[in-house]
Each structure stands twice: as C-alpha cells, then as structure tokens.
Length: 188
Image (cartoon, rainbow, N blue to C red; front, side, top):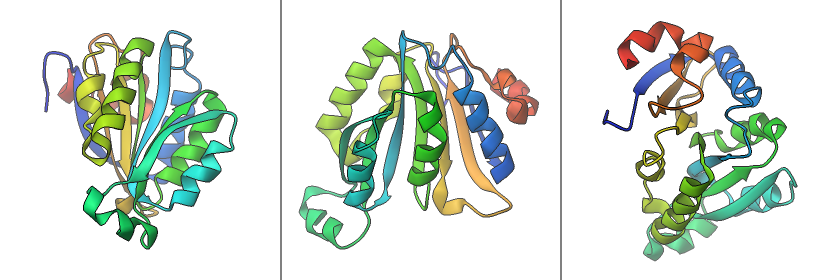
C-alpha cells in the first residue's frame, strides 16, 4: 500500500547471501544508526518465551515488549506452542545480524529505523494493541522511516521473501541497497 508518507514499497525474493549483504549495509549506515533515531526489530510470533528472556540478557538490546501473538483467550496455548513475538530495540549495530537471524527463524521479522519521537508512539501502540498492532502504520508518521522485513517461513537456501518500504525523507533508500537497486524504478 503506497501513500504520501511512503516512498517505496517493494517485495522481492532474495537469497541468503543477499540477506547478509542487506544486513551488512544496514549495520554500516551511520544515518540509520544515528543518535536522533531508534532502530528496532519487531518479531511476529513463532518463538518461545525463553527466546525473548535470553535476548533480555544482551546489553546491546532493549527488549521492550514480548508476549504470545495470540488473542488473550488463547494465551494458555502460548505455553505449549512457540507463539511469542516482541519489540526489541537495537542499541548497538553489531547486534542487528544475530538478533535478526534468531527472530527470523520460521517467523516474520521487520527492522525499523525511525525518529526517537515516533519510536515512543510505536512502543505505546504495541503495548496497547499487542499482537494486533500495526507497527508500520505508526512508523509512516515519520517521513524518514525505513523498514526491511523477511518472512522466515519462506526461508530456503534459494530464496527468502522480503520487503522494503521507506518514507520520502529516509536516510536510506532502495538505491542505497545494491541488491535492490534494480527495483528503484518501481518504487519511485
């Protein structure tokens, strides 16, 4: 869905090598990991509670929220099946790759870079709506937002379903990601 606050939205099958390149590019971007911005991952379920408890031990992260991605009346099921998702702030760029890999195992995960003020609104939104939250709808309030996601359920050696969207003032655009450069015409 394209709107006036979204410059590009593209979906693309990528390889694991291309995923590594994209994560390296994100990690090395000083404009993405800048003091005026907050970078975070939104994990969309399919993990055990212990995954997020382990992530809480990492000083390069701030695990803000995690819970089963289920309606409240199914929470007990969350004790039996992996169903936890969560909101994890990345305080150190070097933590992005390993945490992204953990949260993308058999689940969707999205990386965001937004202004600090917008991040505060996202935290409030996620805490209020939990598994029903629409993180991107709040991120779009920042014309400089950047989002990259993958669906871990689709991961294979040959392809991974991925998507990118960003605001018109984003510090990182599709043209800055060599893997996605050929799609820049579609996203302009």
